[in-house]
Length: 112
Length: 116
Image (cartoon, rainbow over all chains, first blue to last red; front, side):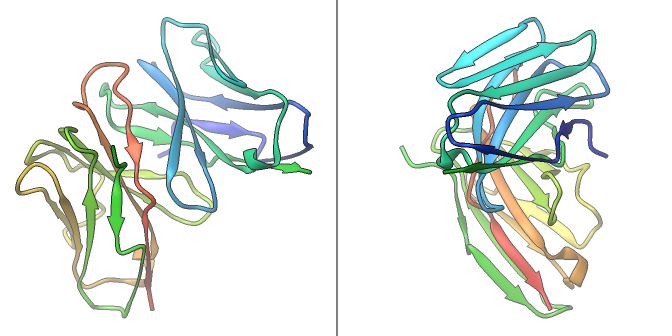
């Protein structure tokens, strides 16, 4: 079963605009991670936010975590065509730190 | 250093055949994972190795699937009597130690398995 669910399923924007993707999950977590996947192949780790953190930045990425609402958001600022990819949130489940559960992802298309 | 590598990148086989998929983790990573990703879905956990032993194989769908990591580095995922439903991208990941709330999994490019 999938724990994280991303929203929206697909997002199309123009280059330079900001993109916001959301993730909801069901059970308590130790951390939440965001990954990017190009063309259905390998995943690239973007950022990890711990359960006791509320916001984290990495370059043009900003992630927030609201444990009371069991939700997270990923903001990509000043998007580029190269940001076109699927974005997944992942949370460890079953009390482990390793058994990641992924949502179905958000397909982001950035038009030049 | 080099990232996680997987071979082959693509594998086409016939129903009922046996296949092996290989994963080379990042040097020094003791934890290794296999995931399976079907079209339009996120990756699903299959198995986790800590060193040479399978610490958690709860995600393996049935006994046709087996994985080994004999020397604590390279791992092989083995699928017997393949079925068309086994068609998917098989992803391997490794992490430093599989413990702790900040242990990050790094993924390989995957092997796309097609069972005809």
